[in-house]
Length: 351
Ligand SMILES: NC(=O)c1ccc[n+]([C@@H]2O[C@H](COP(=O)([O-])OP(=O)(O)OC[C@H]3O[C@@H](n4cnc5c(N)ncnc54)[C@H](O)[C@@H]3O)[C@@H](O)[C@H]2O)c1
Figure 1 (tube, protein in one colour):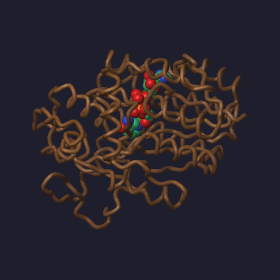
Figure 2 (cartoon, protein in one colour):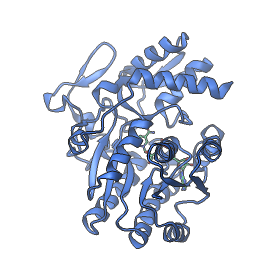
Figure 3 (tube, rainbow, N blue to C red):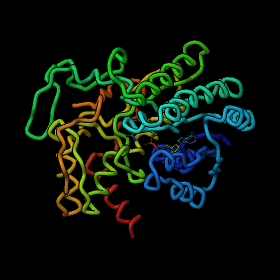
């Protein structure tokens, strides 16, 4: 029986990957998580509910309580399991939170990734290694693209970016936030293990990854948190750019499907921009309207002129490289369906 090791298994992406590899592909799944999200974000970020959901509902899933910063622990587990594939989603995932916890952020995102890469090289160098990176590796360089202002959103004015941001976009000489910088270190290291050691690695530079199993908090999990505020009648704070800032949203199932496609036909040292693309993009104002359509409740929000440091004004991923390399893969969940699922999930969790 094939096995996959998934780090961050109690998180949004990790849990979806566990589910997909067990139910769709028949893998044995080993999850690593230590509920660090609750340490990063407090009780609202607690992911134990999701760990329990996997342990009780998913045959073939085994939880390992391990911190990816524990180099010896990671090495020992990899040596024991020698999994057929590794999907690395554990991270300090917040752009804004990183400045307050620079060492925790770097030790988790950069050093934790290196711990896994080196342990994999020693135990199972032929196993595909999928790393969840982020579009924040581009820093705020996308903000230098000329924009046009539409009624409810910003959009690129230059035809070059008609399909969005491609993988060739510069990652250098812009403001990243400490989170973006620690993710750049990991991203380049994952590429290097591909190029230098010829291991089958890839970096997936995520746009907004979302879905019903996110433990969304103000500092991370934009749509999940926005929907939660709507349902609870709480004020959502919009930070600058007139609320017209654009994100592309991809359902965690479509992320897991792409990871499975890569594991089935791996390449070395690859990079993909993994987002919802233009079709699944929305501004915050547009997300309010779609959510209101499903909940029937007006979104309460306050606006502050100060944008988040280094925040993108308009970002959507160019999906053409992914589609060219893996033509059987495409987005299957529309933005509306995704928001509807998030609404239903928060209602159920509150019940
Ligand atoms: N959600 C997004 O919008 C988004 C966008 C771009 C990139 N990403 C990236 O995708 C990945 C997954 O994001 P997510 O939204 O599923 O995050 P998440 O916070 O929901 O899941 C991450 C999980 O990793 C665990 N974890 C954190 N540090 C750990 C450690 N030191 N040891 C063991 N476990 C640890 C957390 O407890 C959590 O359950 C991250 O690398 C993130 O940077 C996410």
